[in-house]
Length: 214
Image 1 (cartoon, rainbow, N blue to C red):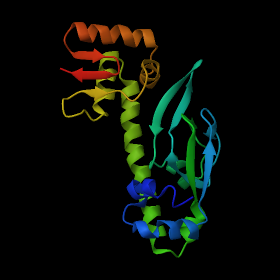
Image 2 (cartoon, helix red, strand yellow):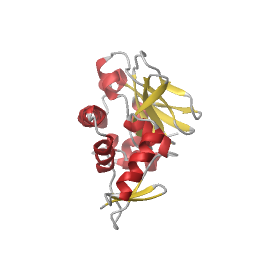
Image 3 (spheres, helix red, strand yellow):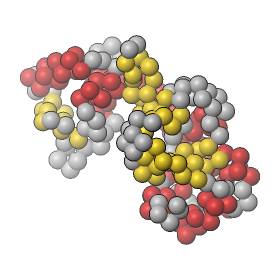
Image 4 (cartoon, one colour):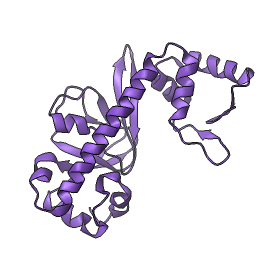
């Protein structure tokens, strides 16, 4: 399990500062395990408490909250990303539903075994996870500001600011039009109308899943 996913742990922020040659030994010392999930399968349900720090080894997962008859996308995570750190650290119930966006495999690191482990890398990993928690709380604050913004155009531009453009200045959208609408908290028709207006007014150019802010 460890050797197969070693390239992922090497580039994950969770293991930053730990000698990659010690990753396997560290994970063995805390009895870490991996769990596979099929696309659409729940990993953490709303109201559930979690004792394991989850790290994506393969595939991708998505956090959502109910919004009327639909769901609101909160965040997505890919290989190397940890998630739900605040739920694990606080021991509180999860406020979001986290499910596999694609077939996924998740590394599960038990909180108490990590804290109690004598392995020198365990304290580093725990500190990294707490740092990731803080970073995500800041990001969540930005996300809440986006959803509180009454103007759809401003929401669109704010969401694009979070995506790094390529060397030409083009932004490749990481989600479908419907997913983008869900992320912004609007219906897809309203999003499409506003994107067309922005394109007609010379604010953006739009080519399928590529956007350029002018």
